[in-house]
Image 1 (cartoon, rainbow, N blue to C red):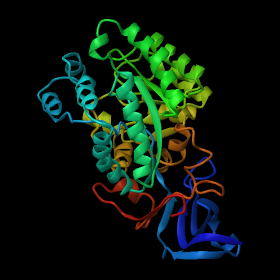
Image 2 (cartoon, helix red, strand yellow; image 1 turned 30 degrees about the horizontal axis):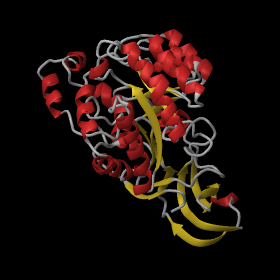
Image 3 (spheres, rainbow, N blue to C red; image 1 turned 180 degrees about the horizontal axis):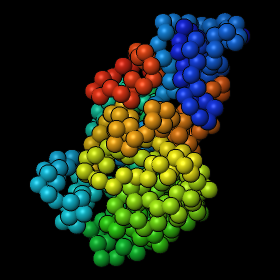
Image 4 (cartoon, helix red, strand yellow; image 1 turned 180 degrees about the vertical axis):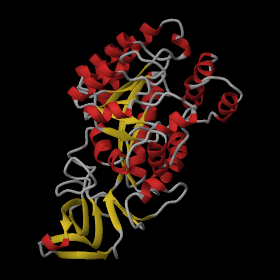
Length: 400
């Protein structure tokens, strides 16, 4: 059987099969035209005629990693707000004083598309260097039509500038811009009646998100955003239950949401709704750590209910300036008490599901994109265990 490349003498963590790591101790991966042709035991492998053969000398191969929740495109930083938090100010205090998202909005509105691409590339490169082959990028710092479109165009360009798949998410309902400070419903009108149709027509977003929170948008306003997204054929996601419980996760599940993210204040009804809908819980330990949150997401209850759990960096300038998905793995284990298997599934199989891409990426299976991370490790637990180390040997995207 003809193929383009064969990676042999490898140990595989295929993440296939729906549970566990799918370990193959003596394995081989073959690709053709950018897709996996075979991934499995060497003993069962067809006799491939390969244009190129790569010996892995016992190294581990996993699916390429997926960072399924980022705000990678933005201008400016919020280091000063970090100092304020160290001095005792809360996230809500800073936001209500005109900082937080509003601060990044001002810098982002002033930046050109080229500026946004240039500043985001450094952050993206750090993720790529750790084996990331797919990254989700949200808008949400423009908070007006033109700068929101500019952010999404910049995000799409990152997928041209670098060998990485970029999934874009429109997050117009992230915060109130100053021109709508006293009329949240009017801003939601703008998001639903103007922004979502324009984004959909331009084909710039793969999903729509919102921030359902006391300092964000009410459940009723969020539902209007979801209805507008559905009317334009766009799936939804949600920032839910990060600072309080507005029952956003249950609302998201009613709309078949791909994921509900953060979830520190998630209740049993929300968990049951997510389980019924198949909505992924995307956990963001970097934000939990950075804002010194003390209420843990209900990990045991999510696990018991069978809700799939993803992990992501939440890379953003205010509450998670994190560009290491490997560190997020360690945080998921140490802060949230996830197992090694859960952590690795969270940045592969379940992350793909949270992006609506489970049929294309996230596991080593025939027919899926040949996105691989090849590691200099003795066991997969090292990817979760080490801090500040990067054991990536090679990264393969679409077979190259």
